[in-house]
Amino acid sequence: MALKTEQNVAGTYDVIVIGAGPAGYVAAIRCAQLGLKTACIDNWINEKGKASPGGTCLNVGCIPSKALLQSSEMFEQASKKFKLHGIVLNSVELDLPAMMQRKNKIVSELTRGIASLLKANKVQSIAGTARLLADRHVEVTKDQAQTIYAAQNVIIASGSSSIEIPAAPLTDNIVVDSSGALAFDSVPQKVGVIGAGVIGLELGSVWRRLGSEVIVLEAQGAFLPMADEEISADAARAFKKQGLDIRLNARLLGTEIIAVAGSKKVQVTYQVGSQDCQETFDKLIVAVGRKPNSDHVFDEEVDLVLDERCFIHVNEKCETSQPAVYAIGDVVRGPMLAHKGSEEGVMVAELIAGQFAEINYDLIPSVIYTHPEIAWVGKTEQQLKAAGENYKSGKFPFAASGRAKAQGDTTGLVKILSHAETDRVLGVHISGPQASELIAQAVIAMQMQASAEDLALTVFAHPSLSEALHEAALAVDNRAIHLPPDK
Ligand code: FAD
Ligand code: AMP
Image (cartoon, rainbow, N blue to C red):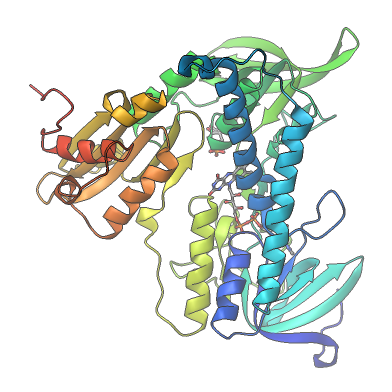
Protein backbone atom coordinates (compact mmCIF):
# COMPACT_ATOMS: atom_id res chain seq x y z
CA MET A 1 0.00 0.00 0.00
CA ALA A 2 1.29 3.50 -0.83
CA LEU A 3 2.11 5.65 2.21
CA LYS A 4 -0.81 7.98 2.88
CA THR A 5 0.51 11.44 3.74
CA GLU A 6 -0.95 14.78 2.68
CA GLN A 7 2.19 15.32 0.54
CA ASN A 8 1.63 12.33 -1.69
CA VAL A 9 -2.05 12.89 -2.38
CA ALA A 10 -2.10 13.32 -6.17
CA GLY A 11 -5.47 15.06 -6.31
CA THR A 12 -8.36 16.11 -4.12
CA TYR A 13 -11.98 16.08 -5.22
CA ASP A 14 -15.45 16.82 -3.93
CA VAL A 15 -16.44 13.36 -5.12
CA ILE A 16 -14.56 10.25 -6.19
CA VAL A 17 -16.63 7.59 -7.92
CA ILE A 18 -15.23 4.05 -8.00
CA GLY A 19 -16.51 2.31 -11.13
CA ALA A 20 -17.71 3.69 -14.47
CA GLY A 21 -20.63 1.33 -15.13
CA PRO A 22 -24.17 2.72 -15.57
CA ALA A 23 -24.29 3.47 -11.84
CA GLY A 24 -20.86 5.10 -11.56
CA TYR A 25 -20.62 7.11 -14.79
CA VAL A 26 -24.14 8.49 -14.34
CA ALA A 27 -23.32 9.47 -10.73
CA ALA A 28 -20.10 11.17 -11.91
CA ILE A 29 -21.84 13.12 -14.70
CA ARG A 30 -24.64 14.26 -12.38
CA CYS A 31 -22.09 15.33 -9.73
CA ALA A 32 -20.24 17.36 -12.34
CA GLN A 33 -23.49 18.93 -13.58
CA LEU A 34 -24.10 20.04 -10.00
CA GLY A 35 -20.73 21.80 -9.89
CA LEU A 36 -18.85 19.19 -7.86
CA LYS A 37 -15.19 18.51 -8.69
CA THR A 38 -15.40 14.84 -9.61
CA ALA A 39 -13.11 11.93 -10.52
CA CYS A 40 -14.27 8.57 -11.80
CA ILE A 41 -11.93 5.59 -11.46
CA ASP A 42 -12.46 2.45 -13.53
CA ASN A 43 -10.40 -0.64 -14.27
CA TRP A 44 -12.24 -2.15 -17.27
CA ILE A 45 -9.76 -3.03 -20.04
CA ASN A 46 -11.08 -4.16 -23.43
CA GLU A 47 -9.54 -6.81 -25.72
CA LYS A 48 -7.33 -4.11 -27.28
CA GLY A 49 -5.86 -3.34 -23.86
CA LYS A 50 -7.63 0.04 -23.69
CA ALA A 51 -9.70 1.52 -20.87
CA SER A 52 -13.38 1.01 -21.70
CA PRO A 53 -15.86 2.83 -19.44
CA GLY A 54 -19.46 1.62 -19.28
CA GLY A 55 -18.91 -1.37 -17.00
CA THR A 56 -20.61 -4.71 -17.46
CA CYS A 57 -23.64 -3.09 -19.11
CA LEU A 58 -21.85 -1.61 -22.10
CA ASN A 59 -18.94 -4.03 -22.43
CA VAL A 60 -20.42 -7.49 -21.81
CA GLY A 61 -24.01 -7.02 -20.63
CA CYS A 62 -27.12 -5.11 -21.67
CA ILE A 63 -25.81 -3.65 -24.92
CA PRO A 64 -23.91 -6.53 -26.59
CA SER A 65 -26.63 -8.99 -25.56
CA LYS A 66 -29.33 -6.77 -27.08
CA ALA A 67 -27.26 -6.35 -30.25
CA LEU A 68 -27.09 -10.14 -30.66
CA LEU A 69 -30.73 -10.61 -29.66
CA GLN A 70 -31.73 -8.15 -32.39
CA SER A 71 -29.49 -9.73 -35.05
CA SER A 72 -30.49 -13.29 -34.19
CA GLU A 73 -34.20 -12.34 -34.17
CA MET A 74 -33.81 -10.81 -37.64
CA PHE A 75 -32.05 -13.97 -38.82
CA GLU A 76 -34.90 -16.11 -37.50
CA GLN A 77 -37.50 -13.81 -39.05
CA ALA A 78 -35.74 -13.92 -42.41
CA SER A 79 -35.39 -17.71 -42.20
CA LYS A 80 -38.87 -18.57 -40.99
CA LYS A 81 -41.30 -15.64 -40.99
CA PHE A 82 -40.62 -13.50 -44.10
CA LYS A 83 -42.48 -15.96 -46.34
CA LEU A 84 -45.65 -15.35 -44.28
CA HIS A 85 -45.40 -11.72 -45.43
CA GLY A 86 -44.98 -12.81 -49.04
CA ILE A 87 -41.27 -12.12 -49.05
CA VAL A 88 -39.38 -14.96 -50.65
CA LEU A 89 -35.64 -15.20 -50.12
CA ASN A 90 -33.83 -17.89 -52.06
CA SER A 91 -31.49 -18.53 -49.19
CA VAL A 92 -30.65 -16.97 -45.87
CA GLU A 93 -27.07 -17.28 -44.75
CA LEU A 94 -25.53 -16.43 -41.44
CA ASP A 95 -22.31 -14.39 -41.40
CA LEU A 96 -21.48 -14.79 -37.70
CA PRO A 97 -18.18 -12.84 -37.84
CA ALA A 98 -20.08 -9.88 -39.35
CA MET A 99 -22.77 -10.17 -36.67
CA MET A 100 -20.11 -10.19 -33.94
CA GLN A 101 -18.27 -7.31 -35.58
CA ARG A 102 -21.46 -5.25 -35.60
CA LYS A 103 -21.95 -5.98 -31.88
CA ASN A 104 -18.32 -5.06 -31.12
CA LYS A 105 -18.63 -1.80 -33.08
CA ILE A 106 -21.73 -0.82 -31.09
CA VAL A 107 -19.87 -1.52 -27.84
CA SER A 108 -16.82 0.45 -28.88
CA GLU A 109 -18.88 3.44 -30.11
CA LEU A 110 -20.89 3.55 -26.90
CA THR A 111 -17.94 3.13 -24.54
CA ARG A 112 -16.03 5.85 -26.41
CA GLY A 113 -19.19 7.95 -26.08
CA ILE A 114 -19.12 7.56 -22.29
CA ALA A 115 -15.44 8.58 -22.22
CA SER A 116 -16.24 11.75 -24.14
CA LEU A 117 -19.29 12.53 -22.02
CA LEU A 118 -17.16 12.27 -18.87
CA LYS A 119 -14.57 14.55 -20.46
CA ALA A 120 -17.16 17.05 -21.73
CA ASN A 121 -18.55 17.28 -18.19
CA LYS A 122 -15.01 17.83 -16.84
CA VAL A 123 -15.04 14.59 -14.86
CA GLN A 124 -11.45 13.42 -14.32
CA SER A 125 -11.32 9.83 -15.66
CA ILE A 126 -8.67 7.76 -13.91
CA ALA A 127 -7.77 4.29 -15.21
CA GLY A 128 -6.82 1.75 -12.56
CA THR A 129 -8.07 -0.33 -9.68
CA ALA A 130 -9.30 1.70 -6.73
CA ARG A 131 -9.32 0.81 -3.07
CA LEU A 132 -10.98 2.94 -0.44
CA LEU A 133 -8.71 3.75 2.51
CA ALA A 134 -9.59 5.52 5.76
CA ASP A 135 -10.69 9.17 5.72
CA ARG A 136 -11.99 8.92 2.15
CA HIS A 137 -8.55 8.52 0.65
CA VAL A 138 -8.54 6.27 -2.40
CA GLU A 139 -5.54 4.29 -3.59
CA VAL A 140 -5.37 3.59 -7.33
CA THR A 141 -3.17 0.81 -8.67
CA LYS A 142 -2.13 0.88 -12.31
CA ASP A 143 0.77 -1.08 -13.81
CA GLN A 144 1.78 -2.03 -10.26
CA ALA A 145 2.21 1.65 -9.27
CA GLN A 146 0.03 3.23 -6.61
CA THR A 147 -1.35 6.76 -6.48
CA ILE A 148 -3.42 8.26 -3.69
CA TYR A 149 -6.35 10.62 -4.15
CA ALA A 150 -8.63 12.18 -1.53
CA ALA A 151 -12.27 13.28 -1.58
CA GLN A 152 -14.99 14.83 0.55
CA ASN A 153 -17.33 12.08 -0.65
CA VAL A 154 -16.80 8.64 -2.17
CA ILE A 155 -19.35 6.71 -4.22
CA ILE A 156 -18.62 3.00 -4.64
CA ALA A 157 -20.13 1.65 -7.87
CA SER A 158 -17.94 -1.40 -8.41
CA GLY A 159 -20.73 -3.56 -9.85
CA SER A 160 -20.93 -7.32 -9.98
CA SER A 161 -19.38 -10.40 -11.60
CA SER A 162 -20.75 -13.74 -12.82
CA ILE A 163 -21.01 -16.38 -10.12
CA GLU A 164 -18.78 -19.37 -10.77
CA ILE A 165 -19.77 -22.74 -9.33
CA PRO A 166 -17.46 -25.64 -8.47
CA ALA A 167 -19.71 -28.06 -10.41
CA ALA A 168 -18.99 -26.17 -13.64
CA PRO A 169 -15.56 -24.49 -13.60
CA LEU A 170 -15.03 -22.21 -16.60
CA THR A 171 -12.64 -23.92 -18.96
CA ASP A 172 -11.24 -24.23 -22.45
CA ASN A 173 -13.72 -21.85 -24.07
CA ILE A 174 -16.23 -24.69 -23.70
CA VAL A 175 -17.70 -23.95 -20.29
CA VAL A 176 -18.20 -20.17 -20.37
CA ASP A 177 -19.93 -17.37 -18.48
CA SER A 178 -22.22 -14.80 -20.11
CA SER A 179 -19.25 -12.84 -21.52
CA GLY A 180 -17.93 -15.98 -23.26
CA ALA A 181 -21.39 -16.71 -24.62
CA LEU A 182 -21.46 -13.29 -26.32
CA ALA A 183 -18.35 -14.16 -28.32
CA PHE A 184 -18.58 -17.70 -29.74
CA ASP A 185 -16.79 -17.77 -33.10
CA SER A 186 -19.08 -20.37 -34.65
CA VAL A 187 -22.59 -21.61 -33.97
CA PRO A 188 -22.32 -24.60 -31.63
CA GLN A 189 -24.44 -27.60 -32.56
CA LYS A 190 -25.64 -28.16 -29.01
CA VAL A 191 -25.58 -25.62 -26.20
CA GLY A 192 -26.35 -26.19 -22.53
CA VAL A 193 -27.36 -23.31 -20.27
CA ILE A 194 -27.22 -23.62 -16.48
CA GLY A 195 -29.86 -21.32 -15.00
CA ALA A 196 -33.19 -20.21 -16.51
CA GLY A 197 -32.84 -16.65 -15.19
CA VAL A 198 -32.93 -13.53 -17.35
CA ILE A 199 -29.38 -13.90 -18.70
CA GLY A 200 -29.68 -17.66 -19.35
CA LEU A 201 -32.93 -17.21 -21.28
CA GLU A 202 -31.62 -14.30 -23.35
CA LEU A 203 -28.37 -16.02 -24.31
CA GLY A 204 -30.11 -19.36 -24.86
CA SER A 205 -32.51 -17.56 -27.22
CA VAL A 206 -29.66 -15.98 -29.21
CA TRP A 207 -27.98 -19.33 -29.96
CA ARG A 208 -31.24 -21.20 -30.56
CA ARG A 209 -32.24 -18.60 -33.16
CA LEU A 210 -28.85 -18.94 -34.84
CA GLY A 211 -29.31 -22.71 -35.16
CA SER A 212 -28.07 -24.41 -31.97
CA GLU A 213 -30.07 -27.02 -30.12
CA VAL A 214 -30.40 -25.42 -26.67
CA ILE A 215 -31.18 -27.14 -23.37
CA VAL A 216 -31.62 -24.99 -20.26
CA LEU A 217 -31.17 -26.71 -16.89
CA GLU A 218 -32.83 -24.93 -13.98
CA ALA A 219 -32.51 -26.09 -10.37
CA GLN A 220 -35.81 -24.58 -9.21
CA GLY A 221 -39.19 -26.17 -9.86
CA ALA A 222 -40.86 -22.89 -10.82
CA PHE A 223 -40.15 -21.11 -14.11
CA LEU A 224 -39.40 -17.37 -13.75
CA PRO A 225 -40.81 -17.23 -10.20
CA MET A 226 -40.19 -13.47 -9.95
CA ALA A 227 -42.66 -12.75 -12.78
CA ASP A 228 -46.44 -12.99 -12.58
CA GLU A 229 -47.34 -16.69 -12.78
CA GLU A 230 -49.71 -16.24 -15.70
CA ILE A 231 -47.06 -14.39 -17.70
CA SER A 232 -44.37 -17.02 -16.84
CA ALA A 233 -46.72 -19.79 -17.95
CA ASP A 234 -47.51 -17.96 -21.19
CA ALA A 235 -43.80 -17.39 -21.88
CA ALA A 236 -42.95 -21.02 -21.04
CA ARG A 237 -45.47 -22.18 -23.66
CA ALA A 238 -43.99 -19.82 -26.26
CA PHE A 239 -40.39 -20.92 -25.53
CA LYS A 240 -41.41 -24.59 -25.78
CA LYS A 241 -43.03 -23.94 -29.16
CA GLN A 242 -39.79 -22.33 -30.34
CA GLY A 243 -37.87 -25.45 -29.35
CA LEU A 244 -36.08 -23.97 -26.33
CA ASP A 245 -35.87 -27.01 -24.08
CA ILE A 246 -36.19 -25.78 -20.46
CA ARG A 247 -35.82 -28.53 -17.85
CA LEU A 248 -36.94 -27.54 -14.35
CA ASN A 249 -35.92 -29.27 -11.10
CA ALA A 250 -32.63 -30.05 -12.86
CA ARG A 251 -29.81 -29.69 -10.33
CA LEU A 252 -26.32 -29.59 -11.79
CA LEU A 253 -23.99 -32.20 -10.26
CA GLY A 254 -20.85 -31.89 -12.33
CA THR A 255 -19.17 -31.34 -15.68
CA GLU A 256 -16.36 -33.11 -17.48
CA ILE A 257 -14.50 -32.10 -20.63
CA ILE A 258 -14.41 -35.10 -22.95
CA ALA A 259 -13.11 -35.78 -26.47
CA VAL A 260 -15.70 -36.92 -29.00
CA ALA A 261 -14.45 -37.74 -32.52
CA GLY A 262 -11.42 -35.52 -32.02
CA SER A 263 -13.27 -32.48 -30.69
CA LYS A 264 -13.70 -31.36 -27.12
CA LYS A 265 -17.16 -31.35 -25.59
CA VAL A 266 -18.57 -31.01 -22.11
CA GLN A 267 -20.47 -33.81 -20.43
CA VAL A 268 -22.95 -32.53 -17.88
CA THR A 269 -24.40 -34.65 -15.10
CA TYR A 270 -27.52 -33.36 -13.40
CA GLN A 271 -30.19 -34.69 -11.12
CA VAL A 272 -33.95 -34.58 -11.57
CA GLY A 273 -35.55 -35.84 -8.36
CA SER A 274 -33.47 -38.89 -7.45
CA GLN A 275 -32.58 -39.66 -11.06
CA ASP A 276 -29.12 -38.85 -12.45
CA CYS A 277 -29.18 -37.61 -16.06
CA GLN A 278 -26.48 -36.74 -18.59
CA GLU A 279 -26.17 -34.53 -21.65
CA THR A 280 -23.18 -33.73 -23.82
CA PHE A 281 -22.81 -30.20 -25.19
CA ASP A 282 -20.45 -28.37 -27.51
CA LYS A 283 -20.68 -25.32 -25.24
CA LEU A 284 -22.03 -24.81 -21.75
CA ILE A 285 -23.13 -21.36 -20.58
CA VAL A 286 -23.10 -20.92 -16.80
CA ALA A 287 -25.72 -18.28 -15.97
CA VAL A 288 -26.48 -18.92 -12.30
CA GLY A 289 -26.50 -15.29 -11.18
CA ARG A 290 -24.09 -12.50 -10.29
CA LYS A 291 -22.24 -11.53 -7.12
CA PRO A 292 -21.32 -8.04 -5.88
CA ASN A 293 -17.74 -6.79 -6.40
CA SER A 294 -17.31 -5.88 -2.76
CA ASP A 295 -14.26 -7.96 -1.83
CA HIS A 296 -11.29 -5.80 -2.93
CA VAL A 297 -12.83 -2.37 -3.14
CA PHE A 298 -12.03 -1.19 0.38
CA ASP A 299 -9.19 -1.70 2.81
CA GLU A 300 -9.82 -3.45 6.11
CA GLU A 301 -9.04 -0.19 7.95
CA VAL A 302 -12.37 1.08 6.51
CA ASP A 303 -15.08 -0.51 8.56
CA LEU A 304 -17.70 -0.91 5.80
CA VAL A 305 -20.57 -3.19 6.75
CA LEU A 306 -21.54 -5.90 4.23
CA ASP A 307 -24.76 -7.89 4.37
CA GLU A 308 -24.91 -11.70 4.56
CA ARG A 309 -24.63 -11.99 0.74
CA CYS A 310 -21.64 -9.61 0.62
CA PHE A 311 -23.56 -6.64 -0.78
CA ILE A 312 -22.34 -3.35 0.71
CA HIS A 313 -24.97 -2.47 3.31
CA VAL A 314 -26.78 0.79 2.52
CA ASN A 315 -29.95 2.57 3.60
CA GLU A 316 -32.59 3.92 1.20
CA LYS A 317 -30.32 6.90 0.46
CA CYS A 318 -27.45 4.59 -0.49
CA GLU A 319 -25.45 5.76 2.55
CA THR A 320 -23.03 3.09 3.82
CA SER A 321 -21.96 2.55 7.41
CA GLN A 322 -19.23 5.19 6.89
CA PRO A 323 -19.96 8.94 6.74
CA ALA A 324 -19.87 10.46 3.23
CA VAL A 325 -19.26 7.04 1.66
CA TYR A 326 -22.10 5.90 -0.59
CA ALA A 327 -22.60 2.71 -2.60
CA ILE A 328 -24.87 2.25 -5.63
CA GLY A 329 -25.75 -0.20 -8.40
CA ASP A 330 -25.13 -3.94 -8.45
CA VAL A 331 -22.83 -3.79 -5.41
CA VAL A 332 -25.82 -2.98 -3.17
CA ARG A 333 -29.22 -4.58 -2.48
CA GLY A 334 -32.06 -4.46 -4.98
CA PRO A 335 -32.47 -5.69 -8.55
CA MET A 336 -29.22 -5.98 -10.52
CA LEU A 337 -30.40 -3.69 -13.31
CA ALA A 338 -28.60 -0.88 -15.10
CA HIS A 339 -31.45 1.64 -14.74
CA LYS A 340 -31.73 0.98 -10.99
CA GLY A 341 -28.00 1.74 -10.59
CA SER A 342 -28.20 4.87 -12.76
CA GLU A 343 -31.12 6.26 -10.76
CA GLU A 344 -29.20 5.61 -7.54
CA GLY A 345 -26.27 7.49 -9.10
CA VAL A 346 -28.44 10.53 -9.78
CA MET A 347 -30.01 10.38 -6.32
CA VAL A 348 -26.66 10.21 -4.50
CA ALA A 349 -25.16 13.05 -6.58
CA GLU A 350 -28.13 15.25 -5.70
CA LEU A 351 -27.98 14.31 -2.01
CA ILE A 352 -24.26 15.20 -1.95
CA ALA A 353 -25.11 18.55 -3.56
CA GLY A 354 -27.57 19.17 -0.72
CA GLN A 355 -30.72 18.62 -2.75
CA PHE A 356 -33.76 16.49 -1.93
CA ALA A 357 -33.70 13.21 -3.84
CA GLU A 358 -35.29 9.80 -3.53
CA ILE A 359 -36.08 6.70 -5.58
CA ASN A 360 -39.37 4.87 -5.77
CA TYR A 361 -37.95 1.35 -5.47
CA ASP A 362 -41.47 -0.08 -5.93
CA LEU A 363 -41.59 1.10 -9.53
CA ILE A 364 -38.42 -0.26 -11.13
CA PRO A 365 -39.41 -2.06 -14.33
CA SER A 366 -38.00 -5.50 -15.16
CA VAL A 367 -37.57 -6.69 -18.74
CA ILE A 368 -36.50 -9.97 -20.34
CA TYR A 369 -35.60 -9.45 -23.99
CA THR A 370 -36.66 -12.86 -25.26
CA HIS A 371 -39.40 -13.47 -27.80
CA PRO A 372 -41.98 -12.80 -26.51
CA GLU A 373 -40.44 -10.00 -24.52
CA ILE A 374 -41.50 -10.11 -20.87
CA ALA A 375 -41.84 -6.94 -18.81
CA TRP A 376 -43.44 -5.97 -15.56
CA VAL A 377 -43.67 -3.30 -12.89
CA GLY A 378 -45.24 -3.37 -9.44
CA LYS A 379 -46.80 -6.33 -7.71
CA THR A 380 -47.52 -9.75 -9.20
CA GLU A 381 -50.85 -11.49 -8.59
CA GLN A 382 -49.13 -14.03 -6.31
CA GLN A 383 -47.61 -11.20 -4.24
CA LEU A 384 -51.01 -9.51 -3.87
CA LYS A 385 -52.61 -12.81 -2.85
CA ALA A 386 -49.86 -13.47 -0.30
CA ALA A 387 -50.34 -9.97 1.15
CA GLY A 388 -54.11 -10.54 1.40
CA GLU A 389 -54.66 -7.50 -0.86
CA ASN A 390 -58.09 -6.98 -2.39
CA TYR A 391 -57.48 -6.58 -6.11
CA LYS A 392 -59.09 -6.69 -9.56
CA SER A 393 -57.51 -7.97 -12.74
CA GLY A 394 -57.93 -7.09 -16.42
CA LYS A 395 -56.26 -8.94 -19.28
CA PHE A 396 -56.00 -8.52 -23.02
CA PRO A 397 -54.29 -10.97 -25.39
CA PHE A 398 -52.23 -9.66 -28.32
CA ALA A 399 -54.10 -12.22 -30.46
CA ALA A 400 -57.03 -9.76 -30.31
CA SER A 401 -54.90 -6.73 -31.26
CA GLY A 402 -55.17 -5.54 -34.86
CA ARG A 403 -51.66 -4.11 -34.84
CA ALA A 404 -50.13 -7.31 -33.41
CA LYS A 405 -51.97 -9.28 -36.13
CA ALA A 406 -50.73 -6.92 -38.83
CA GLN A 407 -47.19 -7.35 -37.51
CA GLY A 408 -47.61 -11.14 -37.43
CA ASP A 409 -46.66 -11.25 -33.75
CA THR A 410 -49.63 -12.18 -31.60
CA THR A 411 -48.03 -14.11 -28.71
CA GLY A 412 -48.67 -12.89 -25.19
CA LEU A 413 -50.93 -10.60 -23.21
CA VAL A 414 -51.17 -7.50 -21.06
CA LYS A 415 -52.41 -7.93 -17.50
CA ILE A 416 -53.30 -5.07 -15.18
CA LEU A 417 -53.86 -5.52 -11.45
CA SER A 418 -55.61 -2.73 -9.58
CA HIS A 419 -56.88 -2.21 -6.06
CA ALA A 420 -60.44 -3.54 -5.64
CA GLU A 421 -61.70 -0.39 -3.87
CA THR A 422 -59.48 2.49 -5.00
CA ASP A 423 -58.80 1.06 -8.50
CA ARG A 424 -55.18 2.29 -8.18
CA VAL A 425 -52.90 0.30 -10.50
CA LEU A 426 -50.77 -2.07 -8.40
CA GLY A 427 -48.99 -4.05 -11.12
CA VAL A 428 -48.72 -4.36 -14.89
CA HIS A 429 -47.41 -7.52 -16.54
CA ILE A 430 -46.77 -7.95 -20.23
CA SER A 431 -45.52 -10.74 -22.44
CA GLY A 432 -45.51 -9.97 -26.13
CA PRO A 433 -44.20 -7.71 -28.87
CA GLN A 434 -42.42 -4.54 -27.68
CA ALA A 435 -43.16 -5.34 -24.02
CA SER A 436 -39.91 -3.53 -23.13
CA GLU A 437 -41.32 -0.30 -24.61
CA LEU A 438 -44.96 -0.76 -23.54
CA ILE A 439 -44.02 -1.18 -19.89
CA ALA A 440 -42.84 2.45 -19.73
CA GLN A 441 -46.48 3.56 -20.12
CA ALA A 442 -47.36 1.49 -17.06
CA VAL A 443 -44.44 2.93 -15.07
CA ILE A 444 -45.52 6.48 -15.91
CA ALA A 445 -49.14 5.69 -15.00
CA MET A 446 -48.13 4.12 -11.69
CA GLN A 447 -45.67 6.94 -10.93
CA MET A 448 -48.62 9.33 -11.35
CA GLN A 449 -50.68 7.04 -9.08
CA ALA A 450 -53.14 6.38 -11.89
CA SER A 451 -56.18 4.16 -11.53
CA ALA A 452 -57.13 1.54 -14.12
CA GLU A 453 -59.97 3.90 -15.00
CA ASP A 454 -57.46 6.71 -15.74
CA LEU A 455 -55.88 4.39 -18.32
CA ALA A 456 -59.30 3.40 -19.61
CA LEU A 457 -60.17 7.10 -20.10
CA THR A 458 -56.97 7.79 -22.06
CA VAL A 459 -57.04 7.87 -25.86
CA PHE A 460 -54.63 5.44 -27.53
CA ALA A 461 -53.75 5.59 -31.23
CA HIS A 462 -55.19 2.91 -33.48
CA PRO A 463 -53.79 0.56 -34.54
CA SER A 464 -51.04 0.28 -31.95
CA LEU A 465 -49.73 -2.36 -29.56
CA SER A 466 -50.45 0.13 -26.76
CA GLU A 467 -54.14 -0.43 -27.33
CA ALA A 468 -53.65 -3.78 -25.57
CA LEU A 469 -52.80 -1.81 -22.41
CA HIS A 470 -55.94 0.28 -22.92
CA GLU A 471 -58.09 -2.80 -23.44
CA ALA A 472 -56.59 -4.50 -20.36
CA ALA A 473 -57.52 -1.39 -18.34
CA LEU A 474 -61.07 -1.59 -19.73
CA ALA A 475 -61.10 -5.31 -18.92
CA VAL A 476 -60.46 -4.51 -15.23
CA ASP A 477 -64.06 -3.24 -15.30
CA ASN A 478 -65.15 -6.08 -17.63
CA ARG A 479 -65.72 -3.64 -20.50
CA ALA A 480 -62.99 -4.44 -23.03
CA ILE A 481 -64.37 -3.76 -26.50
CA HIS A 482 -62.49 -6.35 -28.50
CA LEU A 483 -63.09 -9.26 -26.12
CA PRO A 484 -66.28 -11.11 -25.27
CA PRO A 485 -67.50 -10.13 -21.76
CA ASP A 486 -66.69 -12.36 -18.77
CA LYS A 487 -69.67 -14.42 -17.74
P1 FAD B 1 -20.99 -2.55 -13.54
O1 FAD B 1 -21.67 -2.28 -14.82
O2 FAD B 1 -20.57 -3.94 -13.24
O3 FAD B 1 -19.72 -1.58 -13.52
C1 FAD B 1 -18.79 -1.59 -12.49
C2 FAD B 1 -17.50 -1.03 -13.03
O4 FAD B 1 -16.61 -0.84 -11.94
C3 FAD B 1 -16.79 -1.96 -14.00
O5 FAD B 1 -16.31 -1.23 -15.09
C4 FAD B 1 -15.65 -2.54 -13.18
O6 FAD B 1 -14.55 -2.92 -13.98
C5 FAD B 1 -15.34 -1.35 -12.28
N1 FAD B 1 -14.67 -1.70 -11.02
C6 FAD B 1 -14.97 -2.68 -10.15
N2 FAD B 1 -14.15 -2.65 -9.08
C7 FAD B 1 -13.30 -1.62 -9.31
C8 FAD B 1 -12.22 -1.08 -8.58
N3 FAD B 1 -11.86 -1.57 -7.41
N4 FAD B 1 -11.55 -0.03 -9.11
C9 FAD B 1 -11.93 0.49 -10.30
N5 FAD B 1 -12.95 0.03 -11.03
C10 FAD B 1 -13.62 -1.01 -10.54
N6 FAD B 1 -29.38 -4.84 -16.92
C11 FAD B 1 -30.42 -4.17 -17.44
O7 FAD B 1 -30.94 -3.26 -16.79
N7 FAD B 1 -30.91 -4.48 -18.69
C12 FAD B 1 -30.39 -5.47 -19.44
O8 FAD B 1 -30.84 -5.73 -20.56
C13 FAD B 1 -29.28 -6.20 -18.92
N8 FAD B 1 -28.70 -7.20 -19.62
C14 FAD B 1 -27.62 -7.84 -19.12
C15 FAD B 1 -27.04 -8.85 -19.89
C16 FAD B 1 -25.94 -9.53 -19.41
C17 FAD B 1 -25.31 -10.61 -20.25
C18 FAD B 1 -25.37 -9.16 -18.15
C19 FAD B 1 -24.15 -9.86 -17.63
C20 FAD B 1 -25.95 -8.17 -17.39
C21 FAD B 1 -27.09 -7.50 -17.86
N9 FAD B 1 -27.72 -6.50 -17.12
C22 FAD B 1 -28.80 -5.84 -17.63
C23 FAD B 1 -27.23 -6.11 -15.77
C24 FAD B 1 -26.42 -4.83 -15.87
O9 FAD B 1 -25.32 -5.04 -16.73
C25 FAD B 1 -25.95 -4.42 -14.48
O10 FAD B 1 -27.06 -4.31 -13.62
C26 FAD B 1 -25.22 -3.09 -14.52
O11 FAD B 1 -24.11 -3.14 -15.38
C27 FAD B 1 -24.76 -2.70 -13.12
O12 FAD B 1 -24.15 -1.47 -13.17
P2 FAD B 1 -23.03 -1.02 -12.13
O13 FAD B 1 -22.57 0.31 -12.59
O14 FAD B 1 -23.52 -1.20 -10.76
O15 FAD B 1 -21.85 -2.08 -12.30
P1 AMP C 1 -30.59 -14.98 -12.21
O1 AMP C 1 -30.22 -14.84 -10.76
O2 AMP C 1 -31.86 -14.30 -12.63
O3 AMP C 1 -29.44 -14.65 -13.14
O4 AMP C 1 -30.89 -16.54 -12.44
C1 AMP C 1 -30.00 -17.57 -12.18
C2 AMP C 1 -30.78 -18.87 -12.21
O5 AMP C 1 -29.86 -19.96 -12.08
C3 AMP C 1 -31.78 -19.03 -11.07
O6 AMP C 1 -33.04 -19.33 -11.60
C4 AMP C 1 -31.23 -20.19 -10.23
O7 AMP C 1 -32.25 -20.98 -9.68
C5 AMP C 1 -30.45 -20.97 -11.27
N1 AMP C 1 -29.38 -21.81 -10.70
C6 AMP C 1 -28.49 -21.45 -9.74
N2 AMP C 1 -27.63 -22.49 -9.47
C7 AMP C 1 -27.99 -23.53 -10.30
C8 AMP C 1 -27.51 -24.87 -10.51
N3 AMP C 1 -26.46 -25.35 -9.83
N4 AMP C 1 -28.14 -25.65 -11.45
C9 AMP C 1 -29.18 -25.15 -12.16
N5 AMP C 1 -29.69 -23.91 -11.99
C10 AMP C 1 -29.11 -23.09 -11.09
